[in-house]
Length: 260
Ligand SMILES: Cc1cc2nc3c(=O)[nH]c(=O)nc-3n(C[C@H](O)[C@H](O)[C@H](O)COP(=O)(O)O)c2cc1C
Image 1 (spheres, helix red, strand yellow):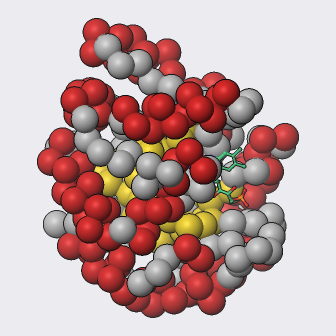
Image 2 (cartoon, rainbow, N blue to C red; image 1 turned 120 degrees about the vertical axis):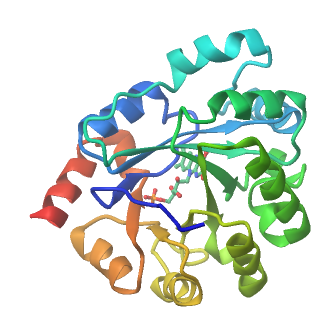
């Protein structure tokens, strides 16, 4: 299968659980983002339970319905976006560790209505780690492989991407082998330098040099120079998250600088 990953402009809004809802992502499309990422959302029973526990300690979580009869209306209320250009793309970031019946029905109901399902192998909230989810998947490659196989079986018209925390990967080559075998359409890498608030450009480069899967560079993109550094080492696009919480127009400013 040829990789059809294409977004334009080459700047994406990265997932922000509890914040990146339909209204937020629509604003990102209106401001010109090449790709928006709704969520993250818990997409199986175990992750929904984890989200409820996270809510108990004050986090805001987006929790999808469990009844199939509610999926369609919920989609229209929470995920339906209006693209301004046909080169813009919609991703939905999902936390999944097992495919239960609800997951199966929900994923099938999303198929074809979004461009990318972005599997979350990035979260490090303790409730998610304790069920083997989020970044734990990066060091349980058997589980990740099986999960990707099972998710792919459910999706006919939606492509698969993955969000990873680069610094948490144990065996990069083994991970890439699996992602290539699974024909993942993009790898979205939070390239944070461990313990610092800057991107590790060498880490990003090491992924770009190791695979032909398109790579979205993420973490601490705050000016045009940061974008250029990531693209110079091979990232096909970059993404931004935290600055957009208080300054949504930041995405338009970056796009304007990139595209002149
Ligand atoms: C409040 C908040 C919620 C987040 N939720 C998610 C999420 O659900 N899924 C995910 O993959 N990343 C999530 N992230 C990580 C961001 O998408 C991004 O990778 C990270 O903030 C680094 O990018 P930045 O420096 O541009 O903020 C979240 C970050 C924040 C601050």
